Length: 249
Image 1 (spheres, rainbow, N blue to C red):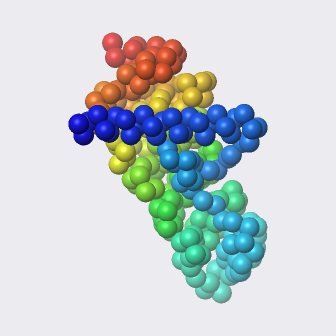
Image 2: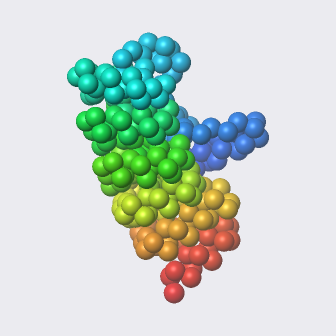
């Protein structure tokens, strides 16, 4: 009974996500930098307009990418670990704003590249969700750990990026030796998410290819015992099936 209930729940979650995805596509809305939970809520929340309007000091400089001001404030011993209402440090804010130079200045000035905000996102995952491969590489170079367990789902930047089909980010994280087979608290790996939360198109198929080529396990199943190949077959994702079947030989 419990197994059947879990299966029904997963099916319903996948339907909700697919409905949201299709709705966004049909409406012409492109949402970059936002990760949608399977239940339709936003999993990663950038600073709002009202929050930005209230920023001062390092938070304000981080949002605008004002490196000179960041360096000036650091020399004056400004608090690099100061957090806004959502637990974002100036470094998180700079990552959300995609300011590479500001991120560099803050970390070189002493900011913790592995700090988590209240929703448990680090700058690598923030950049990964935004599809910003350059910032992912920069964050890793400056001390960010691609193995950090992030989000309320106990996932990783690689899982989030695979979910969204961010090919370049997935490639960057694989190069950075991110854990390929981490299982989040939904029971899903990056490979599973690329299949069940993807659309079966070119981007998610390439993510599957990258993960398989890098050595991601094709045998790790979800909580219902279904492998990535099982999910690909259930969705008739032909190209993914070819990749996964070839890896199984």
